[in-house]
Image (cartoon, rainbow, N blue to C red; front, side, top):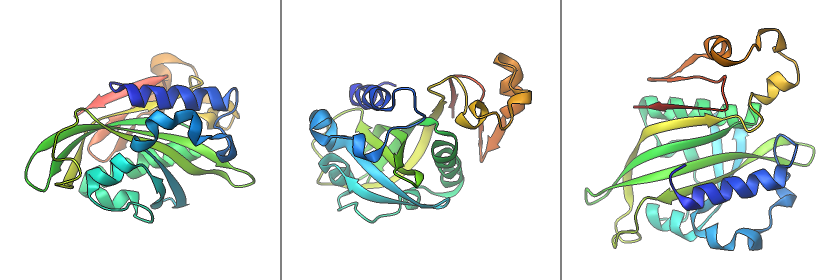
Length: 209
């Protein structure tokens, strides 16, 4: 994680969850992350292909030049990138993974700006992981943010993180017979995500484009 706000939000999520796969939505206190709120958002998991913004910080809305509440997260991605992000979101919701995405964004007037996007699972009482706590942090703070909205974005890198070393499904024993650690697990769980290859076996594996 390259950006301080990304690391701080991840550390906060880690403290909240303790030894659980994910914290409860009621555990999150905005006052505890006041300095991060401008870059944070919460998604509602409507379906495997539909993730809606419930809340979005001021800097997130300014980057896109619009109010983000109700917007569909996947609609901001195109083609193979959309497929890759959908697969990552499924891992966040179904396996309690964390995801870090390097984003190359371009504004409506042709200026490029890297962002770092973090996606973290959050539980809702009686509903499982049906929320995602996230952040969208720019690498810089150019004058045009809030004036010229982002017009396109592509994946520059991606990383899946298993906070407890392995997918939560494996910890429940669903596929424990093939969990052997190290390279064996990487081979067993290697899968193609559109134009990327993601290795699900380790604590964190990065796939640069």
